[in-house]
Length: 207
Image (tube, rainbow, N blue to C red; front, side, top):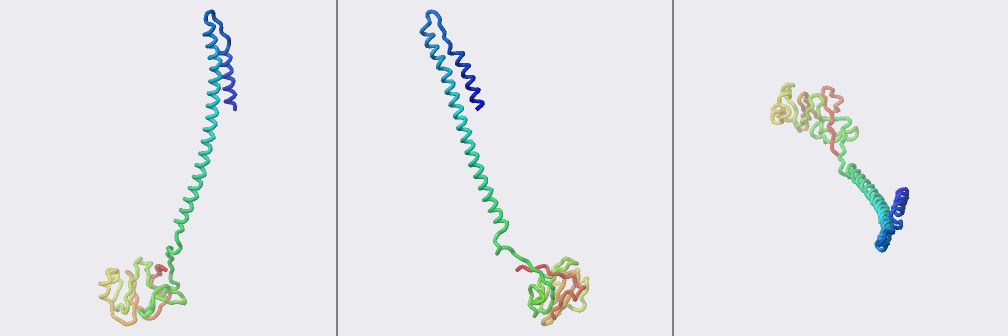
């Protein structure tokens, strides 16, 4: 509104300056024509300026509408992206792999089924790992270790199963276990809490 008022004042000054009577001898017709053109000039300028101001207002209105539309689209896009991101992060439940640990951890002979051991199921753990040497435990069904086995034998030959068989003796129903620092032969179900020399734990089972 202040810009429009300033323009009106400026046009009034132009009108006052160019619209006064001019009378020169021998040039009355030309002066009259010139006066009419000069009188019309401020009006034309005023109309042009008014149209420009109106156009500017229309442009501002159009820009505001476009900005509002863009803001709405951006909000919708961010909302959709957020939903997609949450769906990707969460993923289908059936694709999530859960891992379980034996509690307590059992070892035993070849006739005892393996799996996740509990107080009720009492299965031998087949995912054993040593926390001392950080080796996974190797096991051999229907085998037991020879009495001549020592630490250096397993230190030098683990995890080469072919070389380890040099110290295995066949025994039906038994199972031989070994890492790089310990070994054990089992027939019956045994809780590892009763074998403190074995630093073996369950390495978790995929379920």
